[in-house]
Image 1 (cartoon, rainbow, N blue to C red):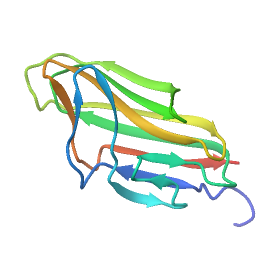
Image 2: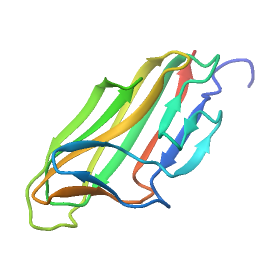
Image 3: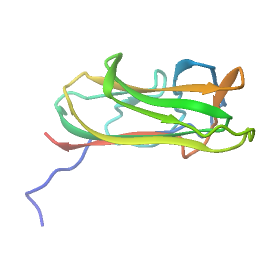
Image 4: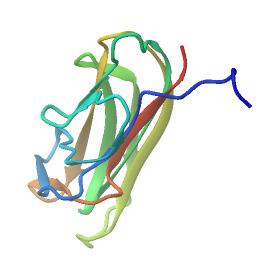
Length: 152
């Protein structure tokens, strides 16, 4: 069937595999550095600044998603989406059960619908509180950020 529906582009999916472990100071936010593009239909994700920017003519409703895993003795973690450099309404926080196991996986994820205009940009930040002096975001395929346009 043709002549109806949406193409769902632009669409992107990036991950941290192929990069270095990112370290954040205990109690601080860091911008997640994405290294690998699994796909980017409109070349709208810029790996140099870790941002998705809505291309010309592509304003609309977008489904945006992300997942980040920590591997520390975490007490508290945030996964926060920023729009145009400001915190967006989506901020996932989780208090973790404390353990002495430094390799306990602590995942945070979200999916959200957003109205985006041409030129709007999105990036992802994480925050961690740990008994260590810092927290790590490892270079893995399951640390990802993506999205696609649902409608104009």
